[in-house]
Length: 107
Ligand SMILES: [Zn+2]
Image (cartoon, rainbow, N blue to C red):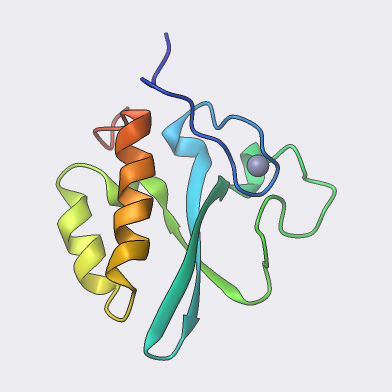
């Protein structure tokens, strides 16, 4: 069964992320400033397991969150914890998730 309305592509390897369980959100945290939000495969689902960090754009300097923390009831709480993030970056990220049609943690 197709879990998506539209495919969600990994910003690291460019391949389609088949299941929301396979996705993480990578971002940079410089004190008050959170930026550069990306959606990438988690390591166990990454086609790039031979590379340290897998699909992460910059594994040694970035933070990650589960993509499923950005859907359903969890979304508001997650966003509120990302204080310091540019609103337009968050909007762009949420738009991508919604575009793909990922709606709940269980999907
Ligand atoms: Zn990837």
